Image 1: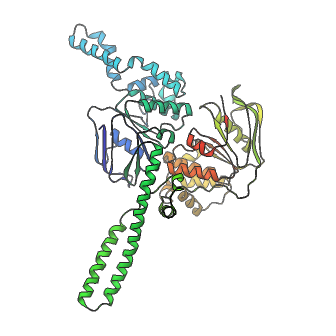
Image 2 (image 1 turned 60 degrees about the vertical axis):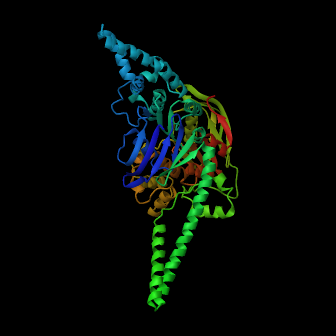
Image 3 (image 1 turned 180 degrees about the vertical axis):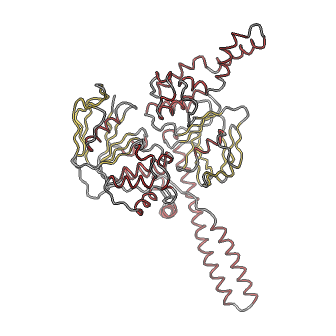
Length: 552
């Protein structure tokens, strides 16, 4: 056993995250860590690395094992070159490199130093560090990073580029266990396949926080953090769905029986109390009092049991029998509530049309000869590598709708849009103007920007619909929200004002599995048009539509 986790209690900011979280990781095992946003997935990685020691329980790592993980903050490292930074975090690199480069100058005939030098040369070769620079350059190419940035300062990289550097560092460290948080967010399909190829072939154990179903499709087991505990599922995503359905239906049955027992006990308490009050015989009164107390004690015990979280994927839920379908619908966990524009009577207006379009920057076209016509009710997928021009095309369409100029230039072709087209946009990054705002103020701002009536009740309802706590979360600054919470704010912003067309840029990033499915279901029912960029093959298969290759 490589890693054993037994956390009896862990709290964060007054919220209890875990109450008896237990599971193990074996050598070489690939583990997908999933759970609803806010259940403590990232916190668990901090506990394993030792960055967070504020918990009750025990986390045991096999003696001598090397744990590698991605760093979230880079204070004190920004003045290093990217190559120096990666090399500095590799196990034993600095120590061995120091011996190899400095000992020849002073070891002389010292046999002890000569032996340490020879051992260092051998170990350096065993770890493959003589080829490290070439390997890192190759990884830069696979993840579509400019190789020249390898020799530039770490502080000059964007946030997304630093995430890629962290991933390259973890992969090349070749420890015993690698801890990785949402690695495929912002990756294109080529980079994602490179990551999946590495993970499946890696000798080390890998624990990856992800709701990317392509990644979950190749893991050995899935650990779901739910209700403060760890639920284990052997196999990949498909097997998880099947096993989860069986487990949840059993839990729903058990919970339903408990609720019926609670209802019966309430009636019993009332009945025994009345019979006690009507009785005149002391023995009878004593008997009914005893029965009332037993029923009340059992009722109190059962009432203290928290309601479990129930979620079954839609395809599996559709196959449940009628009785279980009713029970599941009654008890299932609350999900985000998306209010999309749908009608029984559909039209097919032409909303956006591009004809032989060529767009780029500084007299260089990113793509050429792009042509499509998008009608109401249709779906269009923009597909291509990062940097190919997908976002540039979206910005050009937005500019045509809003009249706000963009930095890009249309060199050839045209874009035509319907007059007064109402458009909803989901972006990967939240606009800077919202970041310092409280969540409730940002929602008010969004409503006002779309001329939608604003009231405290409407804001609180939106907070509730998107799984925010209307009381505590409303005062949270946008910049302090988690990735999943920011994604839900982006959904609110996109759907305000009943848009006729939605443009989505990697909308499944940071969303948990139930929220992804709810988004997919809402978009399936949405009558307006959708333009989307997504490297989630499950999402693309669900939405379908025409695919336009950009930059190929």
